[in-house]
Length: 363
Image 1 (cartoon, rainbow, N blue to C red):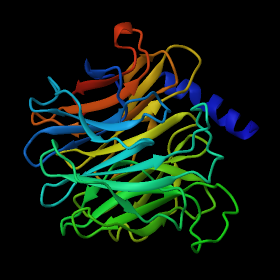
Image 2 (image 1 turned 90 degrees about the vertical axis):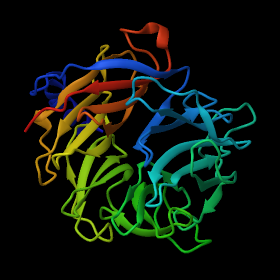
Image 3 (image 1 turned 90 degrees about the horizontal axis):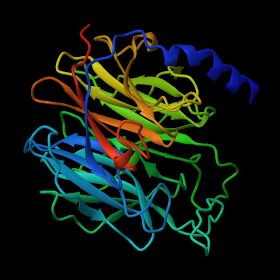
Image 4 (image 1 turned 120 degrees about the vertical axis):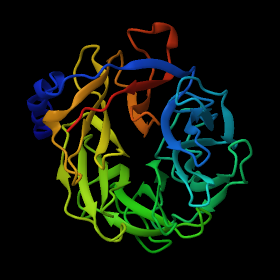
């Protein structure tokens, strides 16, 4: 614990004072009253889709998955469409677009709440399962089908899926150690896995693990460079962002290396037109009202330098914020979605999914 605290304190001045000039950011509310854990994708028809949590706060049995759309590059947003709403808590979405244009949503479903409705992860005898649903138009969604994650017990999707040139889809899912069915879990250590689909997101199987299994990793973002190299940015259980790479379409991964300090997480990765990657990270460092989101851009090889970060949101009034997700607009600017429960500049928004538009810093 002392080592973690020291790391946080050492990095605090660096995060508080960014080294790259802050871009001019236009901020609007994509939706208020909800918006936890947004994940954005550009659809084949040109619209921007954002999957998010609705129906409950951060936790709650009434949690469901909603989706909003923008047809004008993030200027305005549709009313939410219900993607999935079961009798228990539907949460932790991942969003992808198959090669044939089908939208694919992976999510986790949990009934681990006590009789008073309080979340209790120790109630492992109650349902915890992983599902996928698909849609051609975003208005109607298929009946959800279950993904078999029994070998890792906990199977929570995260972030944006990627679709490879041959149509293969990759989705990050985190869970526990791999073990034979029926074998008792010896620990609740987090592991980051990549699942693969070769049928446009209908069925999924575990492909690989990122990391050596000794380090605890969970919420993972992935993006593919034009060279074919895939970059992964994982949240550690300690609350940092770590990086890894794959040169074989996600089958194997390089040794992980740390990028951010404790409480700067999770990350999102977005490929830019010039071949670099925009990374956005939730900032939960500090004790003042300076929480929010910061960004940084890789070089052409996908390497990141923390000292080149820049602030995007700095007025969130609670650590319950962040989870950014970005897409590139048609004019070359970036659109980043995030959530916060309160921000200083717009107290009337309360819980919201905010939309940030800005020019990405040049190389």
